[in-house]
Image 1 (cartoon, one colour):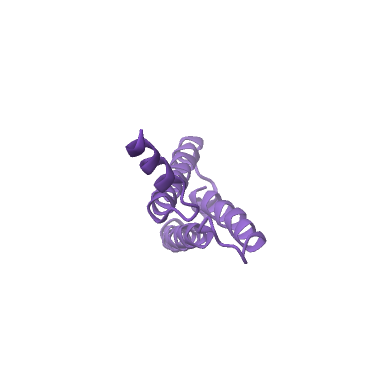
Image 2: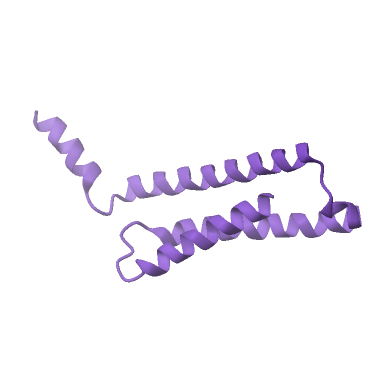
Length: 106
């Protein structure tokens, strides 16, 4: 489940990046790298888990699937937070800078 969640997030972010590729104002490439890196990590985890469990890998308990879903969603949320911090620090549209200087002037 973690692999599916991160792959879907990677595909969606890649499509958004490709759609806005010439501009790249929102630094979606960073988000793509984060999600594809997480997907690769979960793929390696799935390979090793399959090597250990064999056929039982394909019949997880519902509680395990729910835990994996929450873990996948938390990884996506963490990647979005990292991307948001990078976006706010780089401030490509100058919004944060304008807000800070506006407050100082008042």
